[in-house]
Image (cartoon, rainbow, N blue to C red):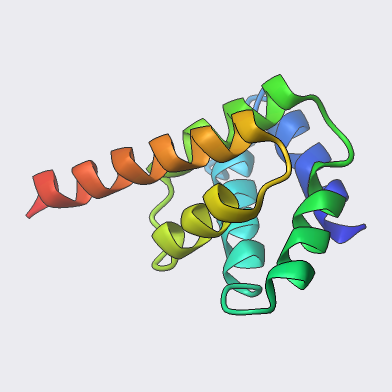
Length: 113
């Protein structure tokens, strides 16, 4: 249930003011992308199990909001993680938002060149 705990942490820290120079929401987003990137390339059933466990706690609206913000994350495997979510997340709304977030991340990357 590590994933479920991570979703809860992200939802909690996204609304809290950062202490000092730390940005807990940014750190939590990085950890979520890192976790997702660690299962890229695994068997589809295994990926689905991981994503189902991650999404079992928390509202659809909260997860959509978190995924929408991931496009701002500078993780090197962000697109892989978002594509994984888009293809395997059990909630269609979250999967759709992962596709949108991936498009926004690609657009940002092209604009930065």
